[in-house]
Each structure stands twice: as structure tokens, then as C-alpha cells.
Length: 353
Image (cartoon, rainbow, N blue to C red; front, side, top):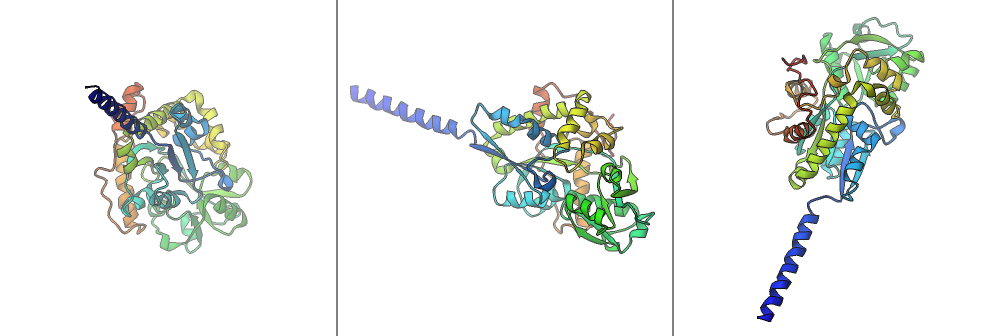
């Protein structure tokens, strides 16, 4: 009897050890977050989204500090294509992506779940060197236009060109990142580029050829996603990440934080503080920082899928069914009592009634 009791006790200890091991495996050692972009000169920070703000304010680090979980950030000067490459090599758990590389990644078989919308609307500015004689896009036919190929910027360029009756074939389209393209405007090595205008104009480097004000058919939405593998293994961690970012979205959407937000974003250097002040004038923070996976987000994603193929930026079809996973966002909105904080937009970008 005593022997049985000892064996029973040993079994309990062994089971407890296994249970403890299983519990320990319920959380990762680190959370790897990729950002499709970097600061000026490749600095490891960025701007313009709630994910960038969360990094600058250290919110995810605070959330997981007590768990001993490290948050590892990767900022890729190679933008969306570099994020896709890192994810294909199993180096990424979560990421911020623009629409074109998101679609291209999906088309090539990358497995991720869409969690949040990041950024929407805004004006679009097409810049030319300050002494350019061009008056319209037609004056630039056959000339050099820069875009960062494979990124959301290329899809935006194609939309702008199509809006005015052109395609990439009408120009010499070359690939440059933002820093290089701005320098090329200054040296007149390119004849046009889409970017924010005010700092360049103030320094006499470039001027506006055209400005497109709030056109949801031209602008795109950003996306925050999680790998399918990580989501299946650590759903509670995914929920905490999403809830933390929704808290950040609320802070970024509060008008009392407008100036502080733009100063934080300005640290990256890629878009100066003064350009944020001016390019976001006329917009509320709420409408541009909405995390909602609403009708507008879905319509924008479908549009990006269709355009990527029509503009021959990808060859494969992409099915969005099962791609979005809104349960984490919905739970975060409920837990934080923010169900009605952001107004949903309809497919055309108008406030949904």
C-alpha cells in the first residue's frame, strides 16, 4: 500500500511537471514585429501609423514585461517586399504592410491573418523639381518618374496615372526608396514623385504638379497581420497584442494628442513634423487612425487585389475569404468599451449611416 502511495505521488509530481511545461509553452520567448519601412537613413523607427506610435511609446514592451516576453522589432528600409522575404524565412510573427506587398505576399502563398486596419484617406501630392516646366502629367510623358516598386506607393502611382488617362508605359518608371527619390528631385535626376510637399517646397527642392484631395479610390489602407502559425499557437497573446494596439489607436485618435503625435512621428525623419501638421489639416485623427475592418477596408482590399492584377503587378488570383480575422479586434473594442468610438466607413469611404 505504501509503495502504491509513493508511485501515485510520483505520478502527480510528473503530471504537474508536464502541466507546468505545457503552461510554459503557452507563451513565446519573444514576439517578432516587422515594420515595412524605416526612418531616414534606415533608422530603426518609423511613423504614420498606430503601430509606429506603439513602438515609439513602448506599449507592447510594457504589456509583456511581466511575462518576460521580449518584443523584437525589425524595421525594413526595403519596405513591404523585405517584410515578405523575412516572413517567408520564418522571421516574423506580426507585421505592418501596405496594400500591394500584402496582396503579393498572399498571392505567393504566405499565410497570415489580417487583424487591424492601419491608416486611411489623406491627400495625394505629385511633386516635380522646383524649376520643372511641366504643367500637367502629359508634359512628363516619356520622362523619369520614381516609385518604390513592389510597395503600396507603386499601386498609388498607378491609380493616379489611370485617373488622368495614363499607365506606367507612358513614362520611364524607376524604383527608388523615399530618401533616394527626394534627393533625386533635388538633383533633377527624376522628373516626378509622389510624396508630401511642404518640407520640399520650403527648401526650394520641389513643387506640386498636382494635388488630389481625399479620394478614397486613390489612397489605400494599411494592414496589421499575424502569421497563421503564431495565431494558432498563441491566441491569447494575439488578443493582448491587438488590445494594446487598439488602446494605442484611441490615444492616436484623441485630438488633444495631435501635436504630440506628430512630434513623435517626426522623429523618424522620413516625413517631417511640419508635413504631418499640414497634410493632416482638415482631417480628424479618428477618421485617419481607425483600426476598423469595416466595409471600406474590405472594399479597399478587394480593389487592391483587382488592381494589382490589372496593372500586372502580380499574376496570381487572391481570394480574401478567410483572410480577415476580426474576432480579436471585436473583443478588444468590447473590453475597452470602444465599440462606438470610431465611425465605420462604407465601401466608398463615406461615414456609414
